[in-house]
Image 1 (cartoon, rainbow, N blue to C red):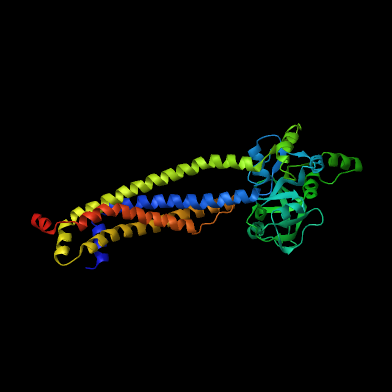
Image 2 (image 1 turned 180 degrees about the horizontal axis):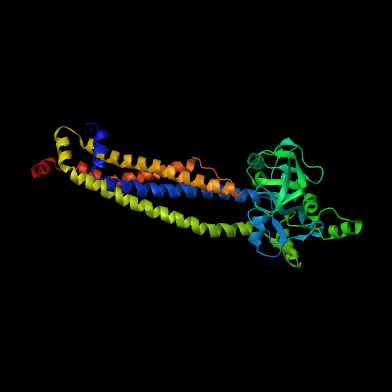
Length: 398
């Protein structure tokens, strides 16, 4: 009987112990795989989407809600601000750029954003086909929008009221697709982008008279303003100036992102502790499995030594048992972890939120190495005892 068959036969003698050790280690690995993949991708996307935005100005309310809605497009806005705030902020010499954002409608769950071409430039967007809009009711769509809806150049569609599917359709107001963007890996991929005047036209309708038009224009609003500072000094002055206005609130993406990471970090750290407990338990379970296997095979090992097996071969067999268990646990853990990430990725895609992919990364290699080290540690004492076994005494005991 070769070494492989010997190992498998021994592990199958007590299948419950073997399965328990493998499952504990696999679940610990799966948890770490999930945390590493999801946390890494979400952290990078959150940082990338807010890069270059020093301040967000919107209606008073929750600063975090304002950031989530205006920058990441995953929450409900805090309200609207007067369109006059655009020129007011642009007149401030401490501000280099102001990008207006108008929300309110969606198309199949993808948000329609009324803005200016500067938003596309900010995220480094490049056209895969077509051109930017030159008039209201023309739209440029992100790569994920094109893939998820099947829209192409010259396609027409009408928006749905609200930021999620299920609202009333604006059937009388149709958009025309004039451009499709290349993938950017940013929030831009999930947006339908048009001129801010398009959003006003959809919700205002056609005014009956010049006086009515003037009233509508005076009451026009936008959802938020994305601000980039011209000077570091602006960080100390501009937020106070904005917050002094009765209808305006300033929120810093960097500060709110830090708060968000702190809150999410509690859950992530809990999962890490859970994974550590599972892995520690698997270490104990592996040790018990291998130690019991040694005690049950003392006579067999003595016979092998008598027939010429060296101490290094006996030690090697014990280590191979541990490594085989680790290999099975790593394979199972990677499979469970990647499937869990794929489920979350599908849910996020359906929610038109972040983009997460289930794939193998270099970080996962370290998880595998740690698992093999744990198996080796668990096997050290049983292997050492097997190598130092007194053959004559063991055979005498029968």
